[in-house]
Every structure is written in structure tokens, then in C-alpha cells.
Image (cartoon, one colour):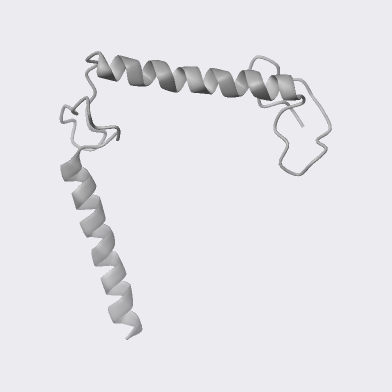
Length: 92
């Protein structure tokens, strides 16, 4: 198996079924990198980074942590509810 840390990519034999990294140090480095990426992403959003909804391209509020606007999110939920009701009606 190859280490999932992109900076390492060493080949190793996993000791457990869910081991992704070849060492604790490699795991710590990958985790810290992921944490810092999220930190800087949130910081740029709070500083005014312009983001658009992935569905309708509407400008998102800096307080919206999602990638889609509330209108699209509501539409997705309504569509899911319709599908579930249709499945329930078909089974009845």
C-alpha cells in the first residue's frame, strides 16, 4: 500500500485494515495540513472572498458555510421528500 500523505507516498505494509499512513509522524503532518487548509479557507471567506452557489451561481453570504444557497438547499430537500413519498405510495 502507498502512504496517503502526498508529500511522502512511501510504500508500506499496513498493520491494520484502515491504516492510511506509514507512520504516526506522516499522519500528524497530513492532519495538520488539512486543518490549516480549512483554517485559511474559513479566514478568506470571513475576509470577503466572493463565492457562488454551485447550483444557481448566486453570490453566497459570508455566513453561509455551505457550497449551495438556501434556496437550492430547500429545493433539494423538497425534491428528496417527493421521491420518498412516491416510494412510500408505491409500496402501499
